[in-house]
Image (cartoon, rainbow, N blue to C red):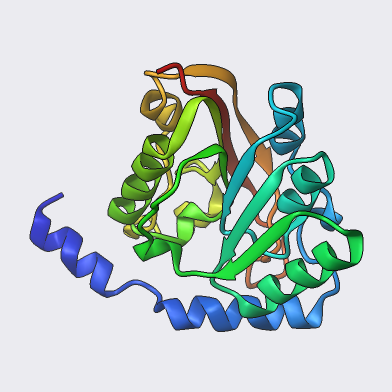
Amino acid sequence: MSEQSRNSKEENRVPIDYIKDKYNKIYSENEVTFGKGKPEKIIEDIIQYCTSGSVLELGAGEGRNSLFLAGHGLEVTAKDISDVGVDKINKLAEAKGLNIKAEVADVSDLSLDNNFDVLISTFMLHHLSRREAIKLIEQMKEHTNVDGLNAITAFTKNGDFFKRNPETDDFYPEEGELKDIYSDWEILEYEEVEGGAFDKNPDGSPILNISAKILAKKLK
């Protein structure tokens, strides 16, 4: 894709304020929106490898992953575009006495300053352009301490989200792409699996996506 073509696609993407308003509405209307409040399985598996240290979650939503990790003794910073989601996280953390600091942030234009032992992002990268997503993943890798972990889940090009709009520049990784990005790390877990989505098709039928899920360890 030419630079001019890519820039044109990025200019035509959904505005960040629309995404913020969308999730503020969803989180306001639902007590628990995604995963019935349970963390992603690959996030649960982090505890097998890390039981203390610092965590950064990018695109934390209502906090199901952050709350789980903080509940297992990790010190968590959670960032999300939705102020409603961030408010939920902070209130739940206070009520449960958990060590979480949740902040409103636009991760599409984020510059990380600190290193962390664990950095995670689940089902958020499709809201970024390919350029933004790759830059963010590169930052995640760079700001991970040695022997630290990254966990990412992302909708791929083999699922309905991408097939509904195949000309999009939103980030949907190719088959095996996340594994390639982390080829210089130790890949602890990797799979591509079929699953549903919160959204529905216009006719009310379920959306089926293929999701890539990776848990990797930084070696040096």
